[in-house]
Length: 285
Image 1 (spheres, rainbow, N blue to C red):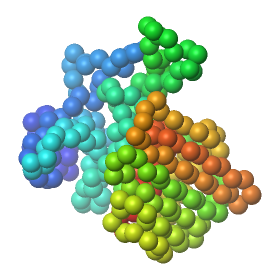
Image 2: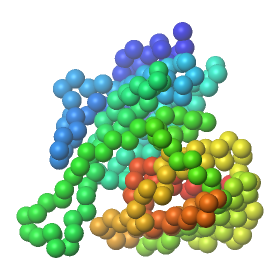
Image 3: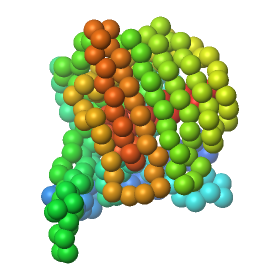
């Protein structure tokens, strides 16, 4: 029996994760929050993990949401899947849903398709009101969002029943300044995985560099873009706040189509948030 399958209680899981990842403290959060029209309600009988085969290798994986303390740093929230990898396990960080739409909690359940398990993330997503609709006593409007993911190449992948089939020639990605220390850099990624990087501000590498993505990274990026299908997304996204950076994304397709997205606040869609996390990490070469 695999080690994950032996964990039977909240205390078991917390002790396992604390020991494995050297947390100073860890407290699991419920994963079965009740999502309603305008709020998220704590469940009467909380569940603190999900065990399913999220990377489709025939072995159970473990999803947890946790508040952790590392050394003297403040508590922080983490959401991750401990995914089987042969005889070992890999920690796969999941984009926390509050980063793209709402400051409340999310709930998680399982979707089965063709005998495979997928993780469904349920959230409340704030709809921006038009200026003429903003008046005293008129509160924000929320809708319920559902995003479905699985694990591919030890990374989070968006599930799509019908992913886009268009070949991609290149991807351009850039970030802008904010009032703080937001990283400012540019990436130009060719279809062969060659990358032109320009570090501008608040990054460890300033200047121009040439990079080569691994085959697994390039495969992941291609699959993620196919699942997200930028051609079906809006050209502009924005949050009602100041002091946030913008992300500019341009995808050039082999058939000559071009899709450009400007996203102020980095919260356009959950799929875009997952893509941004991957591309932002490329600056740490």
